[in-house]
Length: 216
Ligand code: ADP
Ligand code: ZN
Image: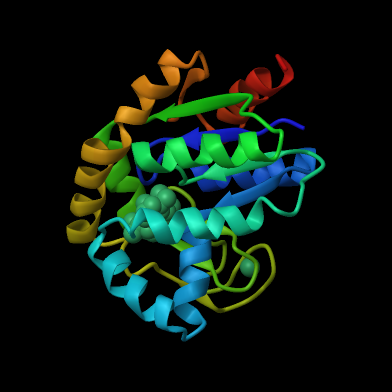
């Protein structure tokens, strides 16, 4: 059971790599962003609270996201967990360490995906996804073959995230540098950190992550 964290700014490609690992290694992706988007669509009180916070680009409270992750860790994953977008603060990182330890588990590695800021803005402001199958596209670098239709499943339900605007992205980047980037030092000091070039093509990034995983 190999548990890893994918760490990096918004748009670094964490979700894309996590989905590959799910397909190729029977790992389970735990994306707090996806969980929060589900919560907001479910019409619950918690969903209403987090929706406004997310659309601004701010971080949701530690209590909420730690609670979401704690629930998921009750169901063991044969191939291990991929933490995608969690932890995002030092408090969340400490909580994850405690949660894993309480289940007799540990972290194998933290993979930092490095991407420069200009590339992030370009990536995110052109991004759209298929609401049916989750495929990810980009206006310039990866458009659908037929406008408005998903290549993978034929759905016409293509969506843009409410926080993938330039204004919200600036807030998300600032949150990343202020609150999340200290985790790079935190995991380095714990001997868990490996950095990969997130600007390489998707397959090359996947190969670099595979190397980390197979090192054991
Ligand atoms: P990205 O990595 O592209 O910014 P995510 O889907 O991971 O996108 O997260 C979207 C939003 O969800 C964040 O901007 C934040 O508001 C909220 N969020 C997700 N994960 C966390 C977390 N671990 N702690 C606090 N807020 C979170
Ligand atoms: Zn699709």
